Length: 155
Image (cartoon, rainbow, N blue to C red; front, side):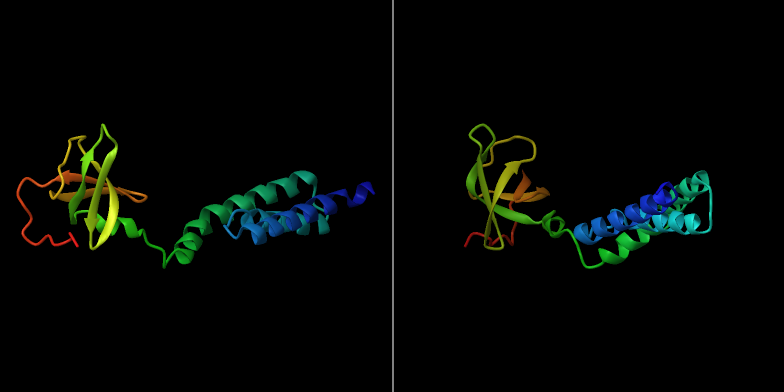
């Protein structure tokens, strides 16, 4: 039984990492599966435990460092952050923005958003504001010093 232990260890680690990768589908353990497979092949050729461990670590780290950025780039080609497209746009305050009361709503393209004053100032209703940042469904806005001519978001 002792002679089969390296086969069981590396084979089991390979199966475990592959199953983890299939379940997660997040590119978490595929590189370690390749490292375990390399160590398993080394066992088949009679390599010492030190060589097996070195192969496992070397193959895993090498593949992780060399391929992860490429793989992540390929698999995220169609994903973009849609919230950043609102930054710099002009909205109209439909509920006074008051950090003390915790109120504030703006309308942008017919959609109501929760709004927070970027500098903590109270901004009255019907005021034009510029969107400075987006965090989830909350807009961080600053009051415009001069009225925006083309703001017609109040529908």
